[in-house]
Image (cartoon, rainbow, N blue to C red; front, side, top):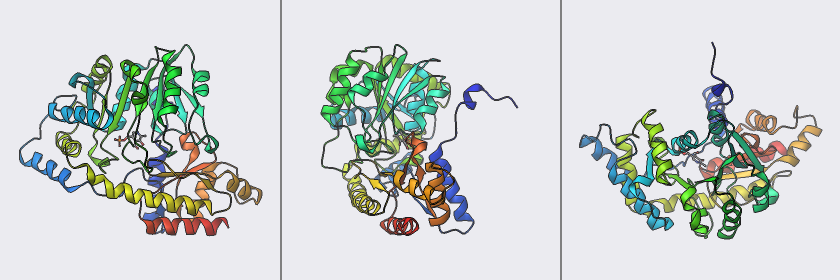
Length: 397
Ligand code: PLP
């Protein structure tokens, strides 16, 4: 059967693949600890669930406006104002079925074949493949633990060509856990200012999973003059433990938002009506519901980082945001290969070894464009984390 060139250019999400493999081994009776998850292990707060139940009871179960209800858009406008000091009007807001669809709409609305999209690596797995679906060209800027996984203004400058159409920035970053500060963003903004044809996509999905005492800033806070060509992407999935509800949103220039909405109108139409009511309750409701979750992530972050750093051959920074430890395993891999335990020096071989021998599922760094690393999610209990690092340590010792 002939498949399109478009689909042949992409691969299934590697993070979902690890989760699926771990689930398969579990079903076979293995005692697998899964650290592959990209979602909070907390329940959606009750007041949010109640809003959805009320929506069902009230018969709010029909199509809504394609780009989201007027009242949810208003809640998003208020959120952007309250938390980010950003002003948007309803025509500059689009609600989609998850942050993933927001991004997909953006790429399809703006990227033509051959257009280059600059993506700092390590990156969220979906960016490059979405660009490939649009037949654009992902251009990576590589970083490692030495740079705290953050790009410099100089690197950005060097990656720009006459074909560059978009620059993607994700802070707090998945998988790196790194957060860009005001000055770093200003430096990147100074480069972008010289290239008015480049669109900026800031993926703020982990805005609220901030593990330091620093206040969240995005590139528009650092460089307000870039607003006419910046799209701010966010969603309720991570902040309110609502991954299954599938509500993402963005704010940006009206012409781009309208184009994205047109794509959405010919693909999925409106996001789920009930989930929109729930998202509205999340954004308008008591924001302290996030505190226990973020506090738990802070504690686990510290524990996991310390524990990983005590294993020979593994190095890990304390994450500043999101709920992942992104550990440098290059030394451990080298050592295992020299002992002929691993067939090759890839992080895939290393992570398979951990899965088979320690029964711990982690995602190889190469899935995120950063060979030699592994991502461990701490969106799981302390008990699981303790057991997982104990197993990894005893396997590698
Ligand atoms: N952006 C980043 C960096 C993510 O990690 C994710 C989810 O893993 C998303 C966007 C999309 O979130 P969702 O589609 O679940 O709302």
